[in-house]
Length: 407
Ligand SMILES: Cc1cc2nc3c(=O)[nH]c(=O)nc-3n(C[C@H](O)[C@H](O)[C@H](O)COP(=O)(O)OP(=O)(O)OC[C@H]3O[C@@H](n4cnc5c(N)ncnc54)[C@H](O)[C@@H]3O)c2cc1C
Image 1 (cartoon, rainbow, N blue to C red):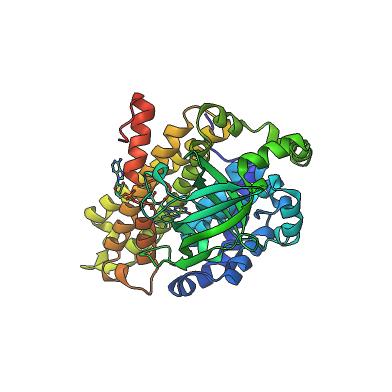
Image 2 (spheres, helix red, strand yellow):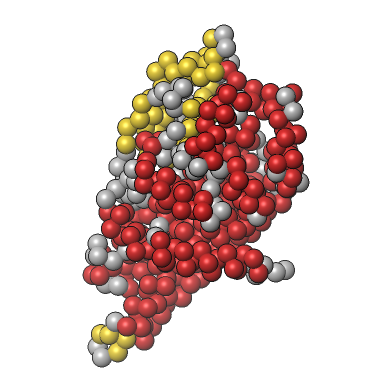
């Protein structure tokens, strides 16, 4: 068993850390306090990442698809500095679906896509359908060559600044189906939602009122058209590594939504690890420097006990998270259990680790002049999206026991 990254991954990690220290760390504290990123700001950050090969544009995707472990490293390191920005960045993964999009849509958006100027979001949650997303009410009714969408979504990351939306709705038969919407062609309204943490990440409600979407933008139609038109063969030529990816095996052993959750939950677990590390590093420094009763507070057994707890939570989260990512990339049947375990465990670990960090810093831990309170608020917000901790427990229980406790 090899726990090390390979030399390319180590090189990437070290140079990315230097990049973050120079480009992001100096601005994060002030910028986070100002609230959700504007679209221009979000695109500005996307372009910076694109320059180092981490875009969602067709060119960068070639690198990304070659090594998802490096994507995990990217997420862990970026979240160590700014979890909100990792959220804004990663929620753009719906842009990969543009590879399969109808030619007219692809051609219309190609320039902005290549330039890294598109933002996307994934809209599933509704006011009355959160954990139980299958009870969603948003409808998509076929009317000739278009679908008419009616309903609303909520708590959708990037919604207020989005150009493209991967929307899940119910068809006439009540089956869940998905669409790729171009906001200019299929307009919808949004309203910003403010929240406890992840302040710089825009989150919003979305309102679909007789919103018309071309029939060919239905994901099932897109996939079947890509097969019949030879587009799939073109994609295979452009991305030779894609066809061999183990991750596709997941789609044979579980539903498409569950397969996507394996990836997103592994990513979220790694992001939680990044926050744990930031809080732990700051606490170790402070415990060595801060003196009370004539000695560093780090010399007390209670502080060392807290540091012990923080290291054990961070290290176990890290091992679980990379294990979940590895199983997901291999397309293993265990990926569902392990990614839910990792997301549930690591996000709760981050709450405890960031809380300890505040305790170790005393009153300074609560100060808005230090980032500890941001780490805590962001970590606290991370136990809800992509399935609450309770839902992760039910997924793990179902996988382990073969018995669902959902109802
Ligand atoms: C920061 C953030 C970003 C988000 N981004 C997105 C996004 O991009 N796209 C999107 O579609 N959604 C997004 N969401 C929504 C998120 O996925 C939902 O909030 C989440 O699934 C929980 O749904 P809910 O808030 O309606 O809570 P509910 O489902 O109403 O749950 C309330 C409580 O009941 C518990 N509960 C529910 N059912 C059970 C059960 N069967 N057994 C035990 N306990 C249960 C839950 O664990 C929770 O404690 C985001 C949310 C946040 C906070």
